Length: 277
Image (tube, rainbow, N blue to C red; front, side, top):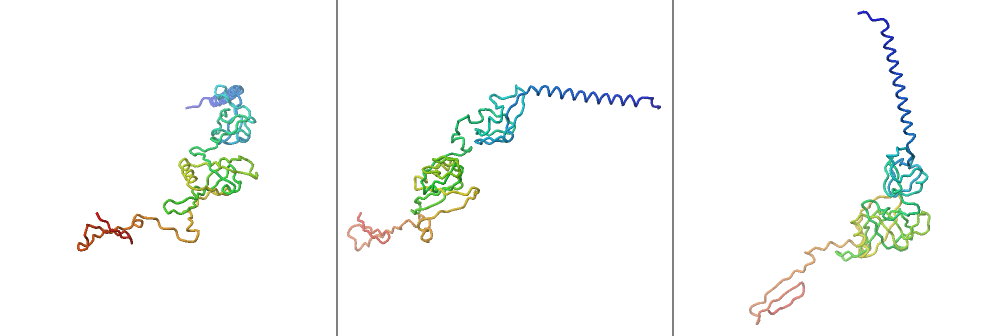
């Protein structure tokens, strides 16, 4: 079949018109979108995940724009309003930051905000000797050493009952790492709920001391504790058993020829006793 003259030109023209239309439509849609966004309002959002109980820096937040109907109540609109403020809860990336998410101006962080989820805060008594000479500061990690009388062996025993424990607060709550004085009468520790019982039972039964760990040391060291007997080089006493604690009792009836009245002789160890019923 013969091809009609001019058909190629018509097709090319149609394609050109289609391209021009698409470009013009895209341009119009972009201008319309820009016109709409021009009416969006600035809001401060998290540039990264900001953990709870964290002091906010400028790098942690940024400005984003939202339509009025999508803006949460009581949001911040200026990043500088958030600098050096402390978060109450974890803020997710791109999440709008509301005034209820951080501590108010002049409001100090309560101790409860510093306790991690699932943990508990508990205080123990210390002095200059038991508290590493007032060197302990909030944020340090310590080991807890208890000295008590072992009820099984009756030996005075010293043992690490907890290791790598976070210090939340000291009675002199200094934040300066170079401060000359730290804890002088009490240290507040972060422990698991079940460990609160262990700490208080050990404190009631004997004395507690704390040892200060290096900043990056998280190693847990197995320890069986040390008794007074072992200080002199002696071996630990064997565990008491029911068999070794009992003294056998032997009952021997007296000879029929010698007794005038019914008698029973009881021998307990090396002691002998005659009983007349």
